[in-house]
Image 1 (cartoon, rainbow, N blue to C red):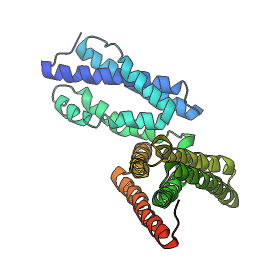
Image 2: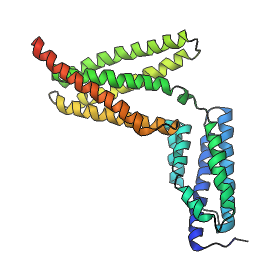
Image 3: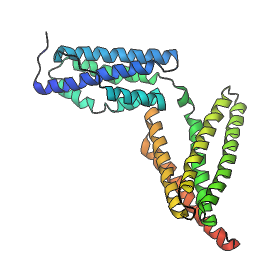
Length: 293
């Protein structure tokens, strides 16, 4: 027999039931390809709990909704591309407004208090148990990314006025970037080995890959725009820098529960500040050295 509640409360329950059903399927899908036995066990446990909540809501709605295929596909793809920890925590972030819904249910739905407590305490504890390899090397990726942003942004900005030719700027930046990639990766390898770590090769790989991808992204504007459009290329390059910083900072803020704004502004101001100083250095170097290209 279905339990009776007001129409407004029933609408809230239907929405929550849909979310619980979708999330139980998402957790199960992610568990099918997540690495690590404990990770899979944790994800399947979360799926089971979400399905149990869905069943409780069914006693009020008297029906089981159809899965939201778009939402399920979206989070499953996010998990495959950016990692299951990021996908799961991003999904849980979207439930921030759910606490208001639980408050509205408290008077008519006695079970809502127990479900709310489990959502807040138990599921958060289970999420904290997730252990994804790529997140163990976020420090290495930050090292490569941050060094590439600061060093190459400064170099390209300096080359912009000194060379005033996008092809020459791209060539110079590529040479500097490739050399710095190997330098940074080898330094990370030696540092890890000196600490007695067995994952030195993997750690330096994450650092090198992050650096190299950043090099490619920053040089791209100078290859795509006309040779003499070095100022628009510089502006576009700075836009790419901000986009990379915003994207990576958002990723780490979600996956590692870190504050977004402070880390974003810190990295952005350093990178753009170095670019401005280097641009001025390029102007002064060309002026005082009397170099004409």
